[in-house]
Image 1 (tube, rainbow, N blue to C red):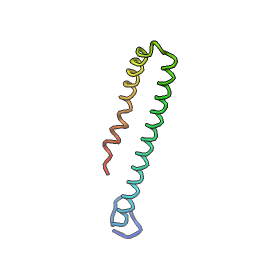
Image 2 (image 1 turned 135 degrees about the horizontal axis):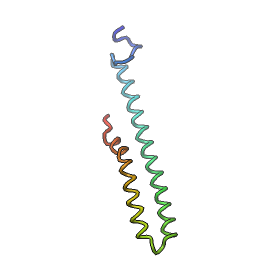
Image 3 (image 1 turned 30 degrees about the vertical axis):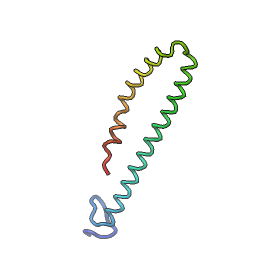
Image 4 (image 1 turned 90 degrees about the vertical axis):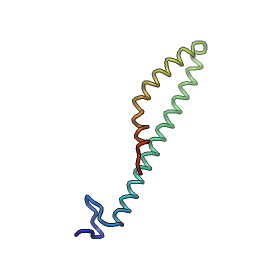
Length: 92
């Protein structure tokens, strides 16, 4: 039946279904943002620990190694720019 209280398949017909749909969508977006920021935090911590280990190992040659690593990280980050664009394009 059109607009009945229990049916919301496909299209949203009444305000209670729309509210539930909106809440579910916002919850999903919130969880996705939390996941992406947690993933970024973990990768930042791994990068920091690798940086400290490299400084200890390559004491005199660290500037040359640091430049090479930064170039490689920049190339990898261009691949992950899609994730940043995904966060920027979220529309609530």
